[in-house]
Image 1 (cartoon, rainbow, N blue to C red):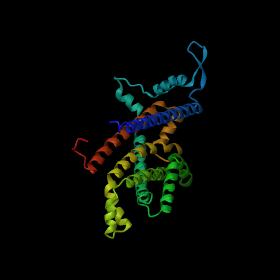
Image 2: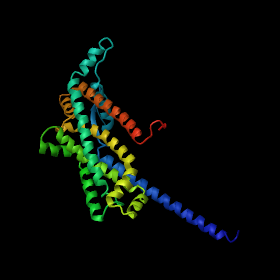
Image 3: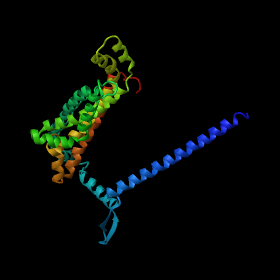
Image 4: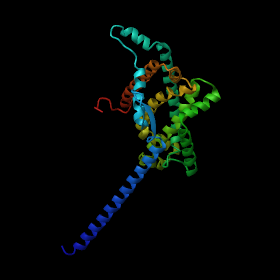
Length: 304
């Protein structure tokens, strides 16, 4: 027992030193986080004050956030339509008075997202293999491919839409190209990360039997990453539907142009109708994509 005492004392000293080091690291990290939080809040105007006129006519200085919250509620209240039980059908017809135009633009929005997702799948799938550290032929190809994917996903799809509207004019084509290019960059990163997490032993077996680089990808990597690719693709399709309903603000087709007109003319009930259409569509796509994903990867009927 005496012989173990120095070793135990050394262990306790090392443990105490490690604890002190961890506490110092946690303290420094917390302070840096707090500093960044307050600096960002100050730059963003979270601590700004503004003058507000009370119902009694008195003007007081108030924190801008607290002063603006009631206006948010007022804005949301304006978007709610007046519905009565006695005239519910007529009220709904008045609320969705442009339903034929909106349904056509909704179809256009979904088709823009669909075509853009297809472009993103093809581009991301082809570029994900040279962008993977464990699959790229050489470092030069790896760096060039990764930088390209970073550039096209760093630029927002709304900016790409502005560029393509200038090049090809107003219409869905600009929206498809903008969202498709951005989706290529985003999916390329996700696909490449899935490739890097794949088991390399099948590739080694294919390579040892004389298989080419393409054979290694086709038979060693693709079967492993297909479930991840399906999940990422369906998620991206949902994101693209939401994006395609916004880029119409710059003339790239879809429901966005109707949302812009409604906001410009302060047609608040039209805004709520359009938001409800987008909301229901996204929920339906989410439920459908979940069923499709489970069926493809063989999880249907397993309680997952």
